[in-house]
Length: 291
Length: 334
Ligand SMILES: Nc1ncnc2c1ncn2[C@@H]1O[C@H](COP(=O)(O)OP(=O)(O)OP(=O)(O)O)[C@@H](O)[C@H]1O
Ligand SMILES: [Mg+2]
Image 1 (cartoon, each protein chain N blue to C red):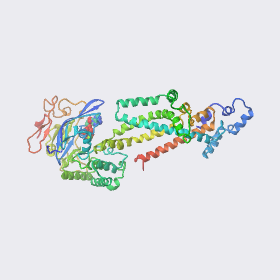
Image 2 (image 1 turned 120 degrees about the horizontal axis):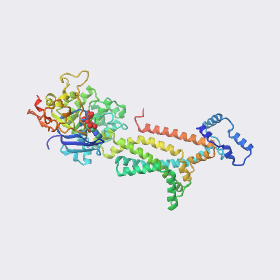
Image 3 (image 1 turned 45 degrees about the horizontal axis):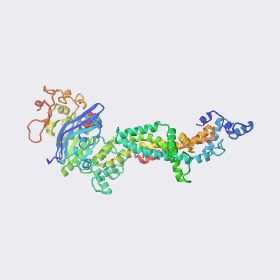
Image 4 (image 1 turned 60 degrees about the vertical axis):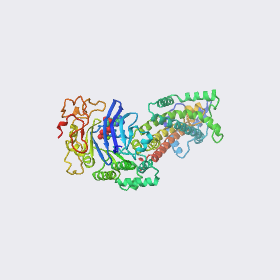
């Protein structure tokens, strides 16, 4: 990962200094950022500092990487959580209804919708939404981010469209999973046992079908959340959403190694944490895993 | 009312399969009286499980078409309103399923699965249902029933799970108990205990029992009557003595061919099984036009065997319960 960042062609120092600079200032900045040292030494230095929470200083802005990431984190968290909420609100009912009536009209429509959500590019969906709701109808601002602490109304207005776009994309993927796991649960023998006991249909469905279909749902939701938290670059750009995806993209463009490395480290961390949470959740809801 | 617990008349089940419609049950008629045990025997695939699942509406509706009549205590199960059928499942008819490994929900405790069945049919408090559940587990011979209530199915052995499934089926004291290979995973002692339990229930409450099994020892031990199924049809039925000692149908005779003397006690807990008949049963998608057994029949004693289906008719004229067989070859019966 570290090596990959440094393999990207382009000299960060040159980019940081602009077009006109003297050889002295070039060497000075190079030395200050440690870029004159051998790559391996740079890596161990960085890794050591990272362990103590110091991710270095941005070449571009001169701010610490941690403060830059901390600044972007709320926007990314907001969007990711809102999106996963939208995704689940779409996917659970749609996937369940499809599974209950396989090959019915509703199932076919749901399949088309989720196919659409998976294959249509998110920037296109975003632009269409902006044109309709911000342009033609003028109901919503076309982008930007306002912290909820400042103005909850404005926060929600700006959150709606990007959350809808990423939510529909994730929701389409999750719908497929819900459909197949509910279908599988429906066909299992223990459902027949539950019916034979004379349980009401609703109880059979809630406790012997949905309860069991929940297990795979936890995994896919975790994967989708990890993806959303690593920043959805395109959607962030379309809606001028100041999240981590944008930060990472700007860092790539400026060859801002410390920021880029910091962002990637964070994404890896997010992935680990979500995996851990999914495992813990699984232990809580699947007695077969408990010891 | 006829006084029977269950009266099945011309039961037919057609399943939609990728290879076309499969006629899995083809005109099954039988009765189960109060306190009576009817054993259903036959090779794998002969339609035993499907025929009983059909009674309680437990076949997937999209795949199965069920016709005929199945009157349980005066009401036809096959035309019943869904809510009434739900009420009947449990107290009317309890069912023990064939595969104990998959018949319980892996994510719910044993206690919960028993309690919900008890509480679905009456205003019972949770605590009372739990007590009843523990009693039931004790009755089916599960050690330490109180603790077993809080166990999950995967923490129990196959035999223990099978006993839980039996306890669930018995939990509402059904008028009819359907046991599909209910004791196959159990050792002889536990099996005997379960059979005692069910016989007690039959004596107390007049429970009728349909017992599907491959185990002729069990048939001889507990059944009043035997129904032999082949290709989705009843090819022979009658009292245990009639069918086991004077089998009329060539298929029944084949099944009993290697039967050791039932008077001898089983050695090392090994109970005699049905013999294997050479050849394979017909595919339900492609049944023969004449006698279902004709393609494998070693006798073929009549010109009509190949093209004309023999009806199930009474044979002999002994006293008591009728002995019926569907074969053209009756003259060979001793
Ligand atoms: N859901 C289903 N869909 C399609 N075919 C089925 C289905 N269930 C059963 N069958 C077919 O119906 C026939 C009868 O099956 P059934 O389970 O009743 O046999 P069985 O007599 O109980 O056999 P076993 O002794 O192995 O339990 C078989 O040919 C089987 O393949
Ligand atoms: Mg079976």
